[in-house]
Image 1 (tube, protein in one colour):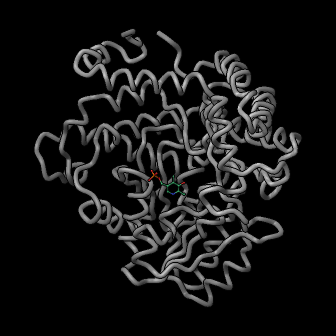
Image 2: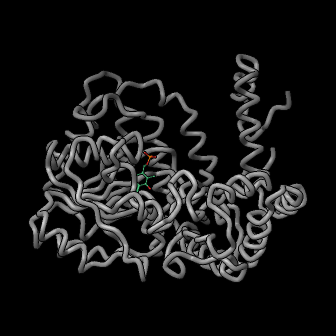
Image 3: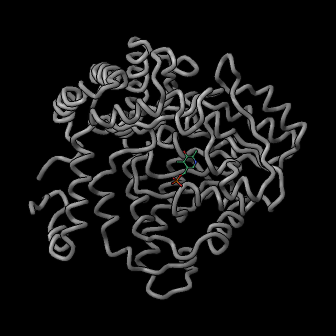
Length: 422
Ligand SMILES: *Cc1c(COP(=O)(O)O)cnc(C)c1O
């Protein structure tokens, strides 16, 4: 089997121990390299972060926090976590940072644990309008354990209606209000949410999983000055290792730390914590700020291209890294579009649009995002080309065009290698 030097000598050890899994890893690398990665929540993390994830930091038990551990031998992992915490506080201007959540969902679980009790009322964006499973879905802990009061977007503007949010909050007096979403292309008015939370005496939690990288790159306004607590993932636009993180005001620091450990988690994944520190260093550079701005420029160019191809952008466009595209004008469902794009080596996901007439398993739309293609170095003219590929692929009902679109996709991505071959 061909060794990919991208992984360095350690990959040879894997190839000899477990060629089956080694070949799956190589095939996945090839899939990521040879297609268009347009999933809005994905990115290509750096070789430096990958090296950290593959390190022996994974071996270390470190329950607790730096200099307050339940295990010996934590001097080195303590250094990594302290460096990461200091970088997070500096980058985001936060009082306190916790780098231990295993994922975005775990960070959210901890935030609930810190501020609310089962049965309490929590207000959050409905999943059907772009919210996340952890914002009150019936199949998630949030919907099972809490009384969820949802808000959505207006049917006409497809944007959050802050007067409606305020009215719902005044009626239900939630103990916590959550804003942030997985499929909302517009900026969120954090000052408006803060004012509403203050009026009803609620904790304001901002789930910044999708857009925190744009905040880190100073391309959009930060929720940190407004929120009691900000939770997020580290692997989306932020481009770090798969994982979660929490920022909060000093007065909530002890409650958040206790909620992450020991309430919700055991030992932290120290290789991931160290990887988060590396990603935070990368995100503090001018190059990353330029990247964050280009992510938005590319998302707007891609959206404009798809509109030119006869599709409709929910809310008319995007202010962020993602767009929600309504395919009803061209008579294609989200589910069909996802499968057809996949056949043409374009990876994206079907998505419900607000007030969707289709069930969620089908959906009337697709969600596209530009974090990964922008990491590769693509710019506006490439986005125009990508819009053309998507347009041809989603209309390719019999699959007859898939091979030729895939070949053109291959030509484009070869110009911008995600992980150069060694
Ligand atoms: C991605 C996401 C999460 C969950 O992150 P996981 O790491 O998949 O658990 C939570 N909230 C929002 C808004 C997200 O977009």
